[in-house]
Image (cartoon, rainbow, N blue to C red; front, side, top):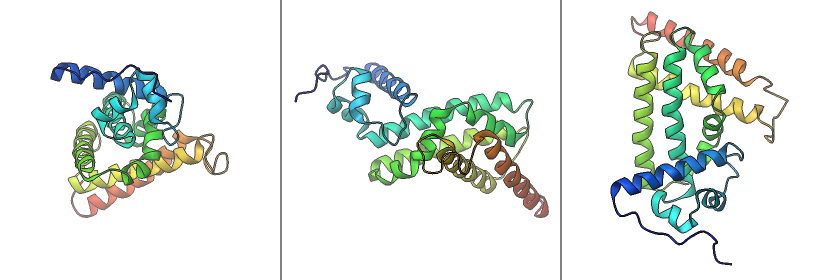
Length: 210
């Protein structure tokens, strides 16, 4: 059966391309507010964006690359919110609270290992650059209250993603561990991060570093 979306019309300028990509990311984000990343299909995104699936693939290459691009944008928005929260709240609590307020980001983090495993070499290079940018921005946001060396920032970034992804999968309806392991996502992540940050800073102090 032919696709019902309008035929693909190539953007004629970089500005048009960026506008269309922005609209695609917005449509995907709206879909993710209703459907989990693990089950969201390219057809559902295409319908929401008013594009054919073939047109979407011309912009992003694959469903996985599209979802990970949305995750990158969500990371940047989260870090902006975190920077404000850190003015009055301790780092572990601020991290957990701002993550809990962004369910789309948490769901994408939980789904990201499978998404990443399906990327090609070019998309992996793009993802690595995005991850580096996000990590540097996170470090800048944390700097006033939790200054960290590059090594410790990498460790904390990994911990944030590991704790968030696991706790979200266990706490979200439809997951295998629902209501058996995690009943309060925010407090669980806050507690795990508080322990991790305490160990990280104590280790740094022992070595004369932060």
